[in-house]
Image 1 (cartoon, rainbow, N blue to C red):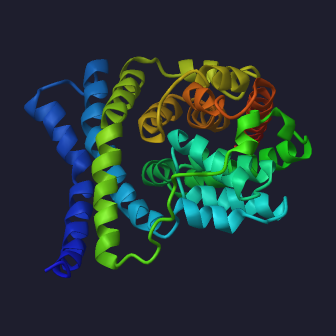
Image 2 (image 1 turned 180 degrees about the vertical axis):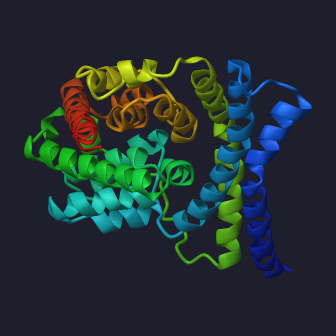
Length: 338
């Protein structure tokens, strides 16, 4: 009986593709024909953006969370710790950043993962490469960027996120900041975290993927809709050229301002992508928008509060400073090149 579930996946994927392709004409018909809004008005443009992007982003979200849910069954926390344990810096930074992409643990997992890494002998800089990469190079953001903007923007996001994670982790490792760990961290061994079953059957992996869709999409859909609503407002009501003046290449202060605005914001990747889309459509520079997005999902205040339980303030400030500097470099670099 369970085997039949796998035969249902291909036709479901075909239905998904067909539905995705008809979203735009369906949204235009609903907005301009059924509701009767004028496409030349700001309200009509904002509503059309919202009606089109809401199902589009949610459909992409369900697809990527299901796929990543399957991948996660191969990368448990125990396996991740074993892979990184004993690795020297530089090589370890690269491996940790790459593992962060395919093991996208949320900020709530930062404390137990940090403890597990320290207990397993993972160098502090390598640990930071993982902790930077896991939220910043977010698989949901990567797939949504690919679906909305194509492989070029998605590839830039992946490459720059890895660059920041590897470089920041290496720099933090060179600074020898172990003394700024909370004393109990080095004294506490990881307890109560049992090794997860790494020999799951495919039906079990499918169950994990379906559960991931229920849990993750259930938690973020409100953020997604809120982000799309903000994006719709920007799309419909922000005048053309205003964002180009505020977040454009000519405004030298736009990149640090974008980072400063992004840090106190709390949003996940799925919620911030529609805002990114609207900003780019209104003329904001790619580098400035990327810096804003990375600051929101990579340097959020809630994550800093959680990490404060294991890191002293000097280490928190060093972490934020090094990562913010990397984000600034990326923002200015892409504003210069593109």
